[in-house]
Amino acid sequence: MEILVCVKRVPDTAENEFELNSAGNDLDRDDLVYSVNEWDNYAVEEAIQIVDNVGGSVTVIAVGDDESEEVLRREMAMGANNGILLSDDAFVASDGKGIATILKAEIEKGSYDLIMTGAQADEGAGQVGGMLAAMLDMPYASLVNKIEPGDGKIIVGREIEGGNQEMNEVQLPCVVSIQTGINEPRYVGIRGIRKVASVDIPVKGAGDLGIDAGSVGDAGAKTKRVDYFVPDMGDGAEMLEGSTGEIIEKLIEKLKAKGGL
Image 1 (tube, rainbow, N blue to C red):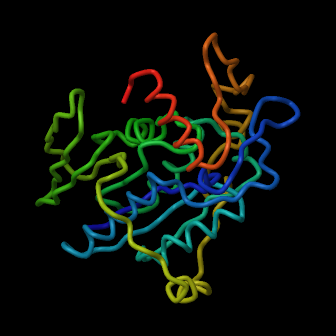
Image 2: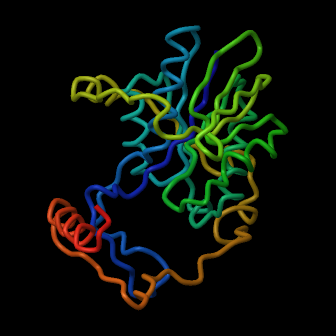
């Protein structure tokens, strides 16, 4: 089975303290620590496990700048066979539709049975997987937490309202968005990273993909972020400060005081 997994380089929520930029329309990203999007990491692990069981290969693909190559190499060190970087100044500030358009152009140049994305990335919109499936005219399943490969199809499980599990048969080729918890992503050691350090990762721009630069990036974006702010605390709200452990202790004490525990 030929599997393509879309991955993204995002700020690491465990390693950063986030502040807004001076314009108030984005995070201040100058000194942030980045890593692979958590949902995407689960998708790569699931793809590797499927290929280990039924054969085939896993390709990871990212839309981003040159630094996104480190995310691709990490996932290749994890076990993906190939990487592709889609990078062009024209891609900067693409919205969900723009990202899906860029990915579609490259996907149509290959032959994939299964295309996987994370359920969401750092913007949290969860749009790209569904848009990509619609553009490719492929079946789509979101929030997938179980995959059973079959002959020309897969059985996918989805957690739905009330904690119930929904099982669906989906014909290949298809697109699925992976939920966290579907597996336990494997540890990536320094030996694996060194092994793929010199592997060639092709970089493709708008011209290589046959994309009109005006249809993606800021010029082609149908949605734009106009404000980004920390909401004011309502009456009775209190912001707990300190380390994670200290905040937990303070919260427990407050819950006890109010009869919650």
